[in-house]
Amino acid sequence: MPDSPPAASPLGCVLVHIYCLRDPRTQEIRYIGKASDLRWRMFGHLCPSSLKTNTHKNNWIKSLLKLGLRPLCESIFRVPVVHWEVAERAAIAEAKALGFNLTNETDGGDGGSISKLKGVPRPADVVARIRRRNLGKTVSASARIRIAETLTGYKHTPEARANMRQAKVGFWRRMPIEKYADVRRRIARGKCRPVTMYSIDGNPIMSFRSARVAAQVTGIGYKLISRCVREKRYQTGGYIWRFAKKETNVPCINAA
Image (cartoon, rainbow, N blue to C red; front, side, top):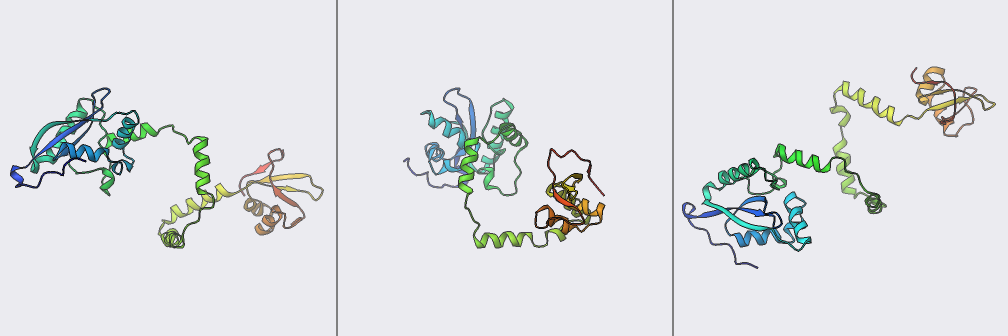
């Protein structure tokens, strides 16, 4: 483990490094930062506890470590500590202008990852890079199985359930009335199942987009039709009602 960082001095006399991490395979600059001691900062980059965070820079370093390589740490220039934010932002901007594919998540000068800055939006180029990387990705079958095994039997704690319940209190009241009607309509459309009306002899007569539409058209109670399609009643209104089958070739009514 390297020596501890140097002790603090009057700010006007303290110089810090604006440094870069290079890819040992291509010599390309991949990260720019600020450090008081390069050895100590490099140790921080490679520390397993630091690499637990899922960031672009950490993923790049971990990919090198898997190959038995380490990033190359170099000092670009030194500046007084009171000016390091401006200097780091300028170095990052210049590197991006030269076309280097940096793993920095911010434009610099913030002293850490964007994940530590709540409420700070990601730079546009970072958002675009993340979008390109994830566009078209699908979850593999093996990953789906692992996720299912992990979630099987999982139950929220009473505290978590109470928090979720509290978060939903007044949800519909807070929603504008025009949006409320639209949301309820979309929910109903997604949940409804087509139903078919049969004669007592078992011959299909007509299909409807949902039991509610069937009730509006025929005048038979919605709950009676609903109980019939779930086979809790044999017939209602002089007809047998069942959930529609794809092979049933009868006219379908979508709305009353």
